[in-house]
Amino acid sequence: MECGADMYVMYEYAASTAVVSFVGKSVVVRPSADSAIQGCPLLVTADYKSKVAFGSEEEVVEVELRNRFFGPGGDVEFIFEVGSIPGVEINGPQQFRSSLGAGERMVVKLKALYLGPGVYNLQNIRITVANGDRNVPFLFPFHWIVAVS
Image (cartoon, rainbow, N blue to C red; front, side):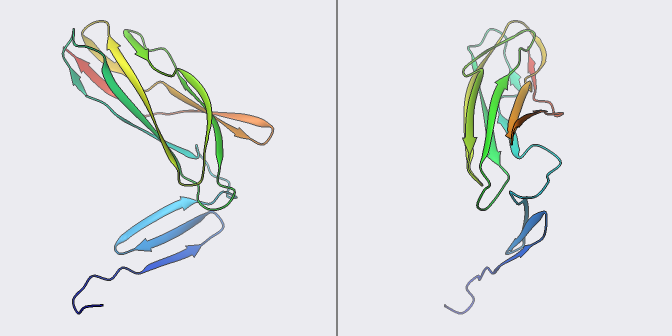
């Protein structure tokens, strides 16, 4: 190693509910597959335009699903559903069953057609996670706001 080169040290500490990894100055905390997490094991985010001109073509909305679990046994089986949104036609996969391995991610591409000017909340995603012999539904409290003028 040359003198003055950056060196990153990774330290991992396992607790009963999470692994804390230190990489450089970053701290990442993820639940282990055998921990009892309080929320959905999938992180759901979206990439979309927040301002759209009325009358434009369908706008692409990319929904990313990321499995927060790590390690063996961290696979998550789930059902993805898009609920109806008044004033918006959503085209693309409305409902499907899938699974993600520990740490894996998936992008679902949807298209939104706005039927009139206004302010719309595109967040109407429901994830149902298979948990043993029962399914656990999750709705998300955040908003994906789009202004159409």
